[in-house]
Amino acid sequence: MGTDIDPSVAEIEQAAFQLRRLWAKPQLLRRLRENCEPGRGIQLSNLMVIYAIAKQGEDRGDVTVGAVAELLEIDPSTASRLVGHAIDAGFVSRQASPVDARRAHLQLTDAGRRIQHRADEFRRHFIARLVADWTPAERSEFARLLRRFSEAAAGVSIDEAEAGRLLEAAAPAADRTEEAPRR
Image (tube, rainbow, N blue to C red; front, side):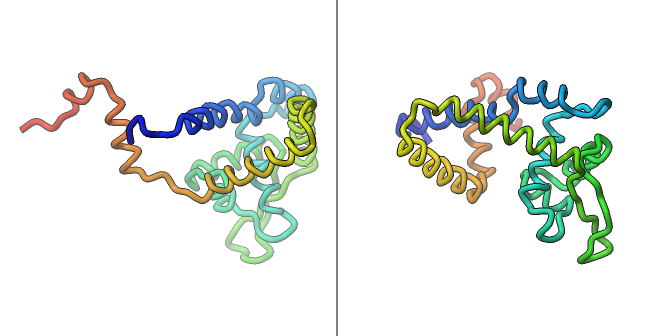
């Protein structure tokens, strides 16, 4: 890859980086912490697990640690640790699976559902303020394009070899010569 990339791609990349802040807004986490039951602090990782379980549709079947790992695109051991923290915080419960007793079925507790509802409400009100001066057609078109972009991103794996080459090419020349194999 070189400089032949459309400049709008760089704009999209920067905007996508900024959008991640909608999920992890410091004000959101602070307000959620203030609204949690005493002793139940909330971390971003708890919110991610709550979202993953809700997204899987806990009432539609088995929600497992593996399903959480897949949705969050993390390895199962990390998902297991994050789910454990969410259980310890009282946002998630684990029972034997009704489908396969060897597996654990995850569900949101009442506290987990309240946190999900409050987080969703906060983000939706925040976004509504951001697009308040947009026309309905602009909001609809933006939603359509953002959904299309998000679905494309979810459906494409990163080519690790290409990523390695790009990162290596971006390293300062001194770093590349130090890491070069010696003969």
